[in-house]
Image (cartoon, rainbow, N blue to C red; front, side):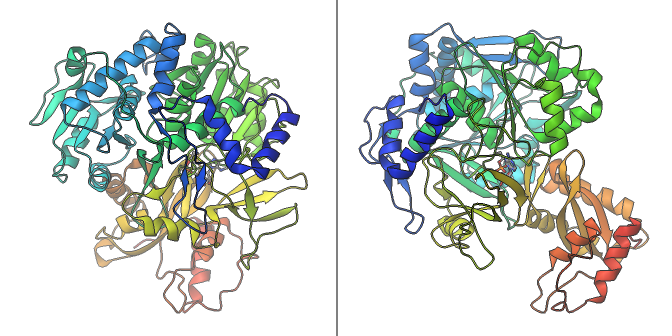
Length: 636
Ligand code: PRX
């Protein structure tokens, strides 16, 4: 697909509608395969599992690296910008990147990693993370990256679940003025992970102290041979596992396979961002999340792009940093999250002014709904009214972008993700579970047909995969989001309608937080909900019943204690903004907490509270509303 006009967009969309299978087989021709697939789609949402291109054989890194290293060896693949603005930036060409990946792959082989084995990465945004992930793919191994903000307990859970035998980490991660002790967290985590045989530690400082089973990654890389033949794998063989929160306490290891994912991220990157030769792409996401996987590691490299990789924060040393990086590297495509936009907006216009942003051609948004004000600010102050904004809706499960405008080709509409990509067939559902057929509609968002980039299963728990995504609406994939469709067929994502909260674009299951805090000896039971937040989009608020041991402590003190506890069991990203100590939680006769009451209390909206007659303790509604109104978390 090489869509450059709105007419071509419509033609492609129609072609995907008429002949879904042929459509995608044709797109496979844009990539190198050892054996070109003859099969497109097998299975359906009514008859899982779904497979794409199952007789195809390939190695995704040949597509990301070898073909560019052959054709444009000296083209820069990665411009690495350090956390510290005074450090020189590093440029890595496609030829060098292939060599680095090959060295790393040989190191992994020396540690007995072979096709199908899992390697876990717990690192900050250093080039070795991107290189390591590709090194796994080079030898048919499976990567599982855990975001560097998760705690030792959360990391240990994930390492155990994906059965990794090798863990790669950094001694410290640099984020702004902070040094995050990543290796220390790994050391603590692997005490609970008997399968782990080796820990490879990346360090800028050669004086690291290494324990048993730990090795200095840079030393190993320097000694390794810079050539490694790619291992060809089946299109349906696993490429990576990435954990994400769901509506139960246990994170889900979503498994993505190699062939369909490659075609999906390759085609969405090219057409949605309209990346052209000579452009400089910058996605600010961390590789610990799906956005970093699809639009930093794979999408840009599949397209032979030049991109910026940045280790640091948007607002360190001050809120000029992003704009300075754009100016310095003449970035043309800038892809970030609404939470960053809102934080930089709050810092004030003075920070964005004074930097030359005239290189910019396309702006992108991802991870959460972008509110009108942030959209307008982004458009005016960053894009200077001349850069199309692509508001890209997608999920860890979808592998790549599903609904978005194509930059400058189809219309950008503030707060709307707009139109589905070719091959994506959305449906909005009614309360009685039927598809809403009017164009203008609002309801739970489903996808009706499989697409190549979709996650194939939850690792080691296929029953949960079927239950979570395919049981609510028979024969359809349920996204967990609610959406609105306007009369022109544009989609606006409203947000999660399950028990998942999007805090600063990070997805957090409320059940995971509840499971954690209920273990705190000051709390008996809790209910966690998402509440609106000016910068973060949403934040976490808990209503909890305190135990005797909480007596004498103020809610403030308890909040601090509980947050320290959350930081240990999940990570600081799941901290509570507010803790209300209540005498009871609103429960139905079957013992289910009526979270709607809590959400409405936080919004102070009694008018749309709805029916509470099924509550066993209706008197609690008033108590909770009053407590929130006073914003006076109760004293235990
Ligand atoms: O609620 C939607 C929101 O982020 C969720 C997916 O989170 P995650 O799997 O962590 O992936 C984030 C990066 C793709 C979705 O269910 N979301 C993502 N993009 C948008 C969005 N909400 C509104 N608009 C978006 N553009």
